[in-house]
Amino acid sequence: MKTMKAPSLTGPKKAIADAVEKLDADLRSLNRRLFDKPELCYEERFAAATVADYLASHGFSVTRPYAKIETALRADRRGRRKGPTVAIITEYDALPNIGHACGH
Image 1 (cartoon, rainbow, N blue to C red):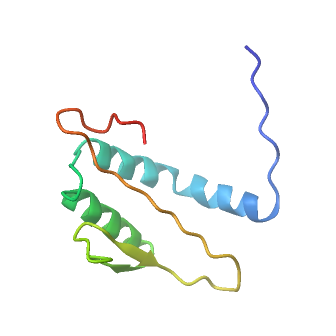
Image 2: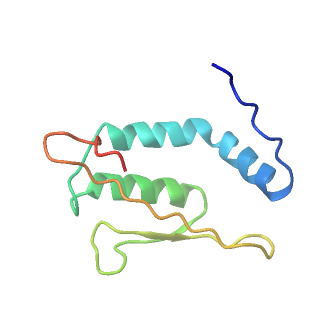
């Protein structure tokens, strides 16, 4: 099977890829902690607290609860200069007796 070479990145795409690469170990650890403790829909208290703590430790202002949902959060961080706004929207609920196996 042929492997495809990734295109070389420049400009903002390279900056984003570099920033994510620096956080690789942290993000993998965060992912593992959430995966190992599945919580059902609207019961994701551990996950919400873990994600909120992680984001706060990286300079984000975290609002919890958010949008009248106990397990929802919003995290904001102003950049050092003008630029694009980035939004990451996620869900991390699990299925009963299965865990994180639903594929989303």
